[in-house]
Length: 418
Image (cartoon, rainbow, N blue to C red; front, side, top):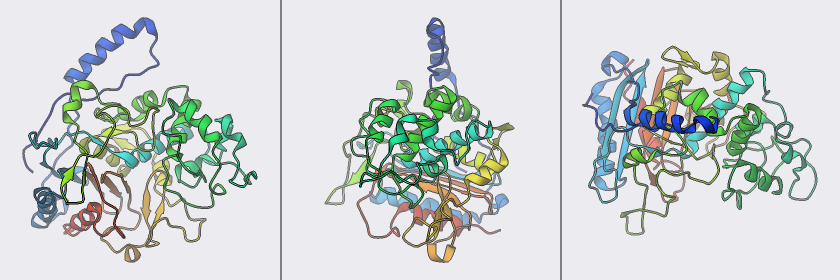
């Protein structure tokens, strides 16, 4: 293990449910917490003691170091855990496009679609309290969605269910005109006027609508704003102090710059929302979270542990088991990818067929990628967690063989010795 890099102020999210009379005192306490908090350390262990061949694991590090040195990516962080111990946690490259600031290991990234697993976990906590069932109609909690229609004007056989929202099979259509909604109430009203693209439950669609709806569902059932609920029920108990919809101003110096590749192969900065502010005006449970490799590894390790981390339980073991099952089993084929190898659980993909998938891994492996090349995996069979953090918008390619997550996955699994 190399020496730790970075440090700095941790992100702390305010709970908007505090009464106004207490607001000044609350803001002072929050500012103090932001200035002094440090993330709980993840336990470390020698790679060989956790079943990795160190010389093989070094291939993963070399690949990422070389990709940054070549200019394929501005920077990268990788974190690998096995049997609950960190065996590799490295950072390469620079935080800024001017290449003046080395990237710290605790750099903050937009995690995009990796937000969906966190949103799904939040909904499952409500199921565990008996406040919702997965096959309940979403409109039972969000009445504005009772009048949804298909594109031809006909009514669907049934409206979307909570399960379909979490499994990306709710049938929603285009997100055009939705992302500018000022808040989740306005988002739902706009969505109610948008035709469904398909009968709910009839097909998988990798859209950015379902998890936003799930976030509003959490608000409607819990009575808390979505960010406050996440903070109270998941982020704070798990020690995820750098995760939220907004990055505190004092921590924005740790945000990794987003890049893409221009026509000449050079790294350039594409247009982006102001760093550290909300990705969309509303609280976006689909793509809206910022996080760090260390924070997200804590969430992933909680899933691997069956809902518990450091003696604190946020989900029941059977709820996590349900989350990590394939919820596309009723479809033909029961998969979402071009190879016919991966199903989809609640908030992430599930590996079903290694041969069709054509890369190293395990059946039952759960995870997902973000649009800006972030990636995570939870492998219960190998007791393995891995998180890759990049901030790079790739150019369109045919297939997925050139994606960083594919190579990282192969380099990760080839290093397992026992």
